[in-house]
Amino acid sequence: MKREPAIKVRIKDIVSGKFFQGNKDEMKPSFLITPLGQKISRVNVLATVTDKFLSEDESYISFVLDDGTSSIRAKGFREKVDYMKKIEIGDRVIVIGKLREWNGEIYINVEIIRKVDDPNYETYRKLEILKEIIPYKKMITELKNMRERMSEEEFINEAKKRFGLDEEIISFVLEKKVEEKKDYKSEIIKLLKELDTGEGVEIFKIFEIVTIPSQEVDSVLTELLNEGKIIEISPGRIKVIA
Image (tube, rainbow, N blue to C red; front, top):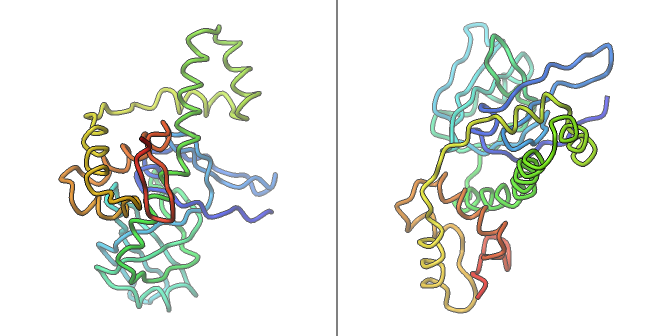
């Protein structure tokens, strides 16, 4: 079975997604569809360890990971326990692993876990994810527009053809409730212009200065990049398009 890539993703997009169980006999891996329509089997998550459990016989260990958007449990078994137990509560870590579901809980089956010491890495990771989800937000918008102008049968057939999604996945991404957000775009653009001395603005400064929740900043920057109102002129540095 082909090894799936580990996708960099926000935890909230995992826990609010829909898990589809695979079939070993048919060589079909399990996967999850996020509310944005991303299909993922393996993840690469940057988060802080907020809780830790180690079984008495040390055959099992679990962490609760929180990235500021939501939390998820990461689990390790047998040979993974020995090096995972060195991780402590409060550590910032990168976790790579397969998504699994047990008793209705989606969790990460850990393959790799390592500490992150660079304080700026979180900011760069957020920008990477923002750029990654732009095409998916465009897809959701296109799907909604298609549904309005087509019959249901035509819409399903065209959506399958254009995006390679089956009917169950299409229904999920369109019916998933999206919370209304306050429009912070003008505030972010104004701040970027004020901070820019000609060479753009390091993205971590936005998160340091504004009082807007970090997940709201994520969403606004995604929309501004998508609309072409800001660009990334170098890794971790953005600029308003005049």
